[in-house]
Image (cartoon, rainbow, N blue to C red; front, side, top):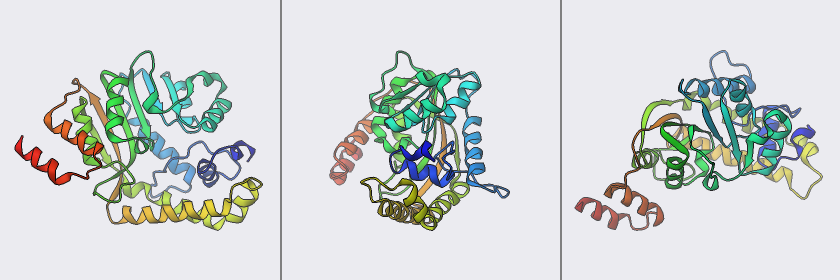
Length: 288
């Protein structure tokens, strides 16, 4: 358990939910099949699905939001030249500790600030694109992905205007197109991953005393953190049930230079204005 005690919340609680002994490899969702028996197996299923999307000609990969480093390590062992980045130093430290043979491949940096010496064949996100403004996300990807390269996103999305917790799917596709990316493959797997949320909140609530004993002794109110986290996940799950949120896999290809059409400029402006002038923008768009 000492392996994850130093992780910052909520990462320590995610890791605990997967494995109380601190041996968690992933902190992402699981893909639940009819014969899936555990969260560990479900997570392996999702990791395998993600890897199956990697195009055959890929050589260099950026793992954006590398978590505990397992996927970066697995891909490295398969012969890919992989760099894993995360803005959280505790996660990077843990990844380096777990995989010392590639410790120099783990970099503590925000995706938005990352400036490598060369572009990548593939950039992928496993539940990490949602933390980045959609416009910024694809403008940065246009710089990080080589011509004819790829973006692989496995993440939560939203379909409606509100609530605004995740990036809206229609905005993602619009900004992808305006930055030269086209869709190659897309898969909706909401039903297969949703059990992860129920498993997670149930386990945290049932084991709060154990969690307090493991992660207590600090200035944090562990019990409050755990219940607030579980309650937040329950509220979000309701939006998945109502189809306002979903979980999808996207494989995009960069096959054209970024184009700043009138439509894409207006879409960017609407983000900057936080949609406060929607009626005015619609009139402009209709006039073009």
